[in-house]
Length: 318
Image (cartoon, rainbow, N blue to C red; front, side):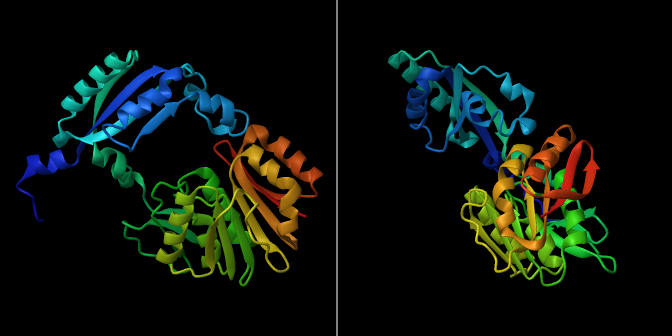
């Protein structure tokens, strides 16, 4: 094995310092403006946004600590290389905030690039879902057993590694309902994992969409990685920009959250084939009955379901 003798230089090149300025929310624009003198690449933590835009919509998935966080303050952070003399940047910020009369607290934290970019990969191993599909990280080697279908994944910053119960439950039901030559729609596709699973199972036409442009890009890259030309990707706010398939989609997947699944209810039937199915997950078991009732009012009736570790996945027909 080749070893780099310049250990200190290598360590320094991959070490970063996170510089954070925190103040009352009224100073947010000023904080960002001053911090831009250090870097235009900023991370802004404004917990008031959680209360205003997410709580009640994605509430099932929000950490309780975020909901209880101080909504009156904001933090703006930048990352500078340890070799860039972060102490100089810190002193500049403290002086600038004092000059402007902004009561900001400036803190620093050492960050190793490996810690936040790659260290998680050591815990991401091949995962079998259902009877046939095996999700394999692209950096891992896996010898497939007869009949197994390998789905390679490099999730990047997108949701969908196959490790979460909701993804595994959806993939398991896909094995049951995807038939050779069928059409599939994945709403909120994340890494594209479910559309790729469907293509591997024989679906001839898969459309994967997400509101997040980064997720759509990663989904497209994973489709190429898996040599699944049947998978097409696009940006869409739920169904707003999703194309309708001739005759409807045979399988629609929505692995999102309970409130969004219910929001899809009135419209998703228009995208489904007469005998098509909706596979919906991201639903905690406490909200199962609420979702099932809401979808039933839209003409979608539960015919199959799976539960794992407090997560519910249901299959609905028109």
